[in-house]
Image (cartoon, rainbow, N blue to C red; front, top):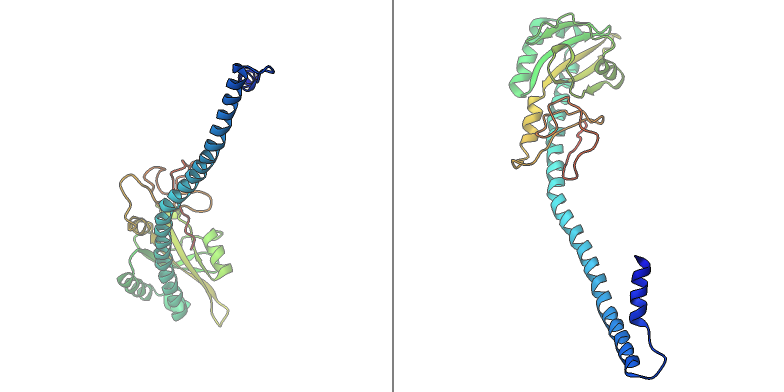
Length: 253
C-alpha cells in the first residue's frame, strides 16, 4: 500500500528532462501541490489545537459543578459526623463510669441526645474487657461481647473513632462512633453510639441529582457506604472499573 502511494506521488512530482509542454504541466502541478500544502497545513494544525482546547474547556466546565457539589456534600458530611462525635465525646467526659452504668441515667442521656440530633439508634457502655455493661436501644445487646472488634480496638488506641458502615451484631448497615476514656482512678471504658445509614442517604440525596445521575459514598476498599442507583446497595462491592462518565467520591471522617 505504501509503495503504491509512493509511486503515485512520485509520478505527480516527476518532471520530464526535455523542455516541453509536459514539463511545464509537471512544474505547475508541483507548485500547486506545494501551495495547497503550505496553505492547508497550518489550518489543520490550528484546527487540531483549537479542538483540543475546546474539549479541555468543555471537560472543565462539566467537571467544575461536580467538584463543587462533592465539596458541598463533603462539608455537610464532615459537619454531620463532627457534631455527633463531639457531642458523644462531651458526654463521655461529663459523666463517669458509675453514672453511665446506671441504666436510668444512660437512658436519660440518650433521650436528650436524640432530641437534639437525628440519626442515633442506640447507646452502650463497654468496659475494658469489651463487654457492654449497659445498653439503651431497640436491640437486646446488653452484655454483648465486643472484645477484639476493630472499632473498639481503634477507639482504645485513638481515643475517638468513627467506623465505616458495617452489619455487626444488629444485622443491618450502621456506623459507630466510639469514645474511649480513662478516668483518674485508672478505670478505662468506651462509650459507643450507633448511627443509622439512612441519615447518610439523605445527606447524599440533598445534593439535588438529576434522574439519570448517581452519587454515592464508598470507602477506600470500594465498598458502598450508601445505596447507588447503578452499582448496588450499601455494602456491595463496586466493579473493578467504572464507566468514564461515572463520578464518585470517598468521604472519610
